[in-house]
Length: 206
Image 1 (cartoon, rainbow, N blue to C red):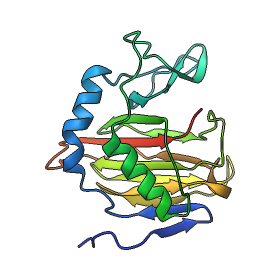
Image 2: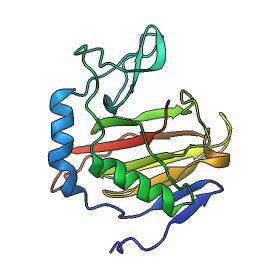
Image 3: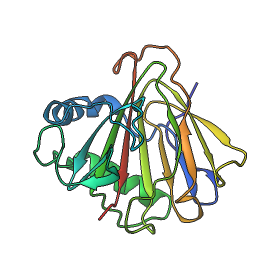
């Protein structure tokens, strides 16, 4: 039986797990509004491979990938319109989680939204397109569980942690540019989110 959120669990120097930090059913309507305005889609890497997860964004800019490379854009390339704004409900969660781990006054300007179907994954990568790397990454899990892995060196040993609905991972400082990713999502069914995992990643990009 998983206990309610009490205090952060330090996974490494600069990385914390905040278990069961959010009651995620309260976010479903707001997330639906965002994804209706800018539907998630499978983007392509600069070398032409289709990404496993479906991606969209909210915020002043959004993270995109295509043959021109990885970058932040103020417009959704699929609609030509600005990305939906980050709802106050979301930014408040991100700021509170960051403050719990020592990052005060965190105000994200990007919420990268990944939708994972069963079998989807995210290969090891660094978050390195942001200007101010003193700001943390705040990552919220919704729906199906996932195995999160991270390592400091590209080919070094990985640590793994199981993430569940409502868990948040915060990383900054020495871990800000760690390699990290998600193992393929196992089959399952969540009472709110069905056979899907959502990941909301809050960043300060500008």
